[in-house]
Length: 400
Ligand code: GLV
Ligand code: MN
Ligand code: MN
Ligand code: MN
Image 1 (cartoon, rainbow, N blue to C red):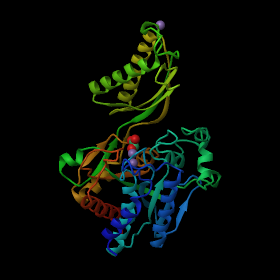
Image 2: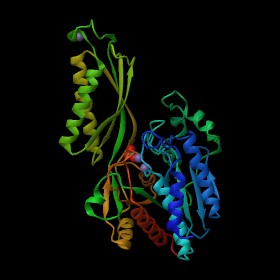
Image 3: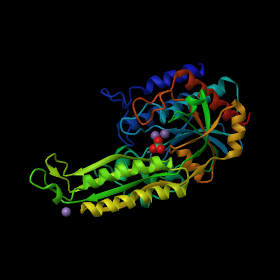
């Protein structure tokens, strides 16, 4: 069966899983039903190709093709999504990995080194707040003792969520001992490839980025009878902080977003007692990121002083600068004349690179440039170009 037909069939299989009828976006929360269904789908796809999947105690998966000598080449991505996310962020890398394996077989390639296809859990950190939790646990960047205290929005502990998906964390984590090189294919999440008018690119680096929880506390009070000058309104402190963060990031050519908010008691006719807001900040260097967050916090503290509110800031899920193996990127770029571009989005590839594994990323053009949204897109011809590019990369790295 030609790899292109396999790709389109797999894509059709995945289309309904976790899709919202109203928005057309995807809710594939880790260890919930849609993501569990996708884990089973991955096992089936691998079995159809004669590959056996190893699923670790938290749901990371890998299947190896070939038992050649030497360190293997791992490719893959993730199957979870952000809340109301697009179809491509994550699954494109997994489907393309399977289709690239088909393409290599069609080409009659017998790899000298094993090729693995992997799926990492909770890449988005959309449920437990820690980006790339699966790969962080596997590489030791986060320990189980740190992770097991995490709870989701409903107060469910991580271990209970994992057990609820039929997994057992005490069964251990994937070993990366066989992984010499990791290659993650991903939909591009910006407009760089569109601007360059090319379908495929490679990654040079990932900007440092992270999440900080801002707890603004004030005094709950009546919305009608409380004079404006008598209020201690944490929503006001938050709103001024969001404006300050936006201005600061614009001035410095960086990124700052408050995309998640929790308000107590969350009533229309009450000044809130507590506003919790999560800052997602990204910058071109570790120092620039630290300065951006420090400046946002300074302005928030200043505003809290004027509003008679108080602020506690807690870092969550911070990732330092990642520069991918430049020699590897240059060697792979020569295969297809692909541009090598930076990204501001986090990936499991960044975590594996930070753990010392030689790592590369292949990006596929996204005509909308939109991601983490139902409007994320990639055209079929570009996806198939991505599969061929990935097959070329794997053939180069695994030898034949
Ligand atoms: C992952 O997509 C991220 O938030 O960077
Ligand atoms: Mn994402
Ligand atoms: Mn992703
Ligand atoms: Mn006052």
